Image 1: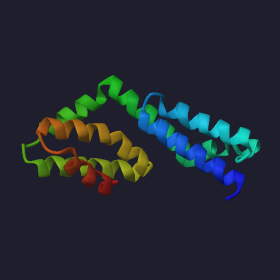
Image 2 (image 1 turned 135 degrees about the horizontal axis):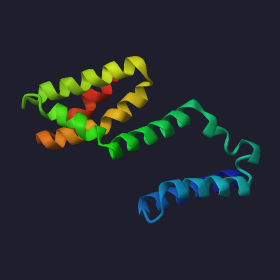
Image 3 (image 1 turned 180 degrees about the horizontal axis):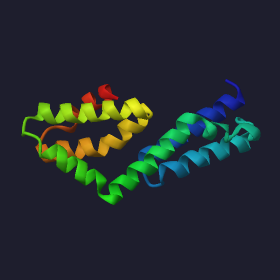
Image 4 (image 1 turned 90 degrees about the vertical axis):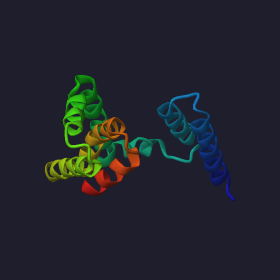
Length: 143
């Protein structure tokens, strides 16, 4: 193995240990790993931040911001309350969630629609007393 390969494995291993330890935030650990990779010479400095301009990264960042905004505004509580007013049959509630995310996916990015509906699905599943996995898998298929 070359020196660069050993350094890369060391950075990855250290990052995994720090992620598992959970003492520092994930973004801090990831940025530190990137900076160390640049300093060591594994990643060229000119290309270090090129990945942040990718459409997927921008989409995920925007979805996280919108999702947090909807949660703080109470819109998610309103929507999950509406789902909770449906008949107690979990199939009807899951069907309504899946239909909602399918309609949203027709007009926006699939990842965005799914991320917007995840908190609603989790809250509705907990309120209905069903496992969250039973609500999330159909939601993923609907998007």
